[in-house]
Image (cartoon, rainbow, N blue to C red; front, side, top):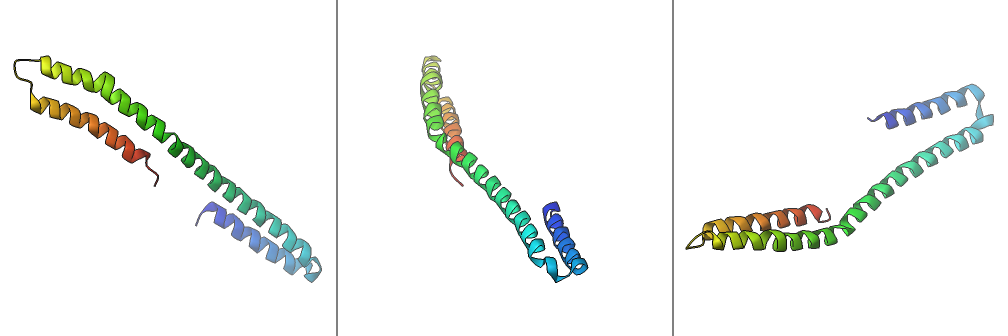
Length: 119
């Protein structure tokens, strides 16, 4: 049980105790006051949920441009030099080194795309 649940429970108990003390004359006022507090709490929780969804939507919307930028950076300033260094490294280019290098580049791109997808 969260502290919010305990607070609500104590408020219900307080309203019921007040009703016992004051009698039925004040039922409408007690219920209206409690209903206002419940509505305010619901509005607060809905606001929190909407904020969380907006942040998630914003992060998801910016994932496409970030993925494109990562792909370009992976190919141009990383992939081409890695390939050129491997080819220029000797008489016979190391296919294993080339595959490992490109597997790392692909791995980074796949990991970013996987992390950026909507849950």
